[in-house]
Image (cartoon, rainbow, N blue to C red; front, side):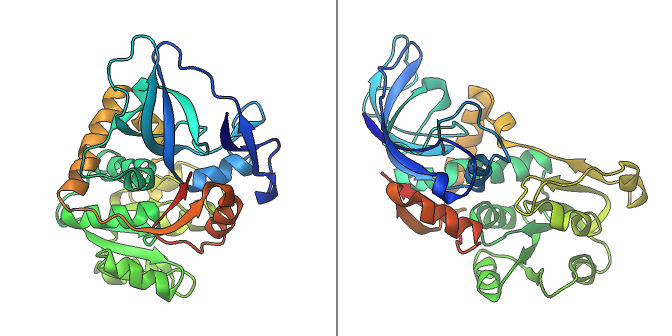
Length: 324
């Protein structure tokens, strides 16, 4: 038996229930994983509320974790018992133990701890595909980064600076503005007090940014489009304020032959080859000192309701980890 955090219906934090669940033996191609740290991400809130339905209920929430392999199913040769491993984008992470497909795991180098891995698998791999696949950032590019003091935003900013970009951060408070500057942001916009496109134009001598990385969604969609240079790329990868409403694609032409993309990490880790490539890139950046992992909040797994409340209240910075 394993303690797990499950939901039996969609709704508020009161729907998060701690329960003992049976853990089966690993089948062919699977491993039994003892999880020591689980990541906390906004997609967990979307799953809890039903914005992103998870299928049949009850369901164990959580999308990333790290731990130690305890047993192998038939045919598994990619990992061994005792290996430290981690994974992203596999529902069911809020648990002390779980069975999981071996090809969803990556082994951790000695330079990356299990807590660090739980904090960066989803967020770090998101930053990786945003910067290298959704729009390949080049030296001299100006980019706009929302929630720059958050988990993805802080990693994205640090990495973008090493790529030679000018980073314009968009945050909601002076405290988060200071955190964004610590991460290397060149300029900070307080979105509650300033006109985002107007300020972006001022900061770029009227040119606009090459890419806008927008995790907010509905509330900032038009501001992001209006901040882009001609041929700029609007990367919408989150819905913190709600999903973007349908729009006329002709608007992209009128605003400068813009590009729009709505990526998801699930696509970028859909094969073991894609996952391994992204993880190699991410772990290399950590090992080389390009990324400083900021675990600014830790919670016991049993306190996940408080963790969700803090996340929704935008009271967290950097990454948060649940410890089992």
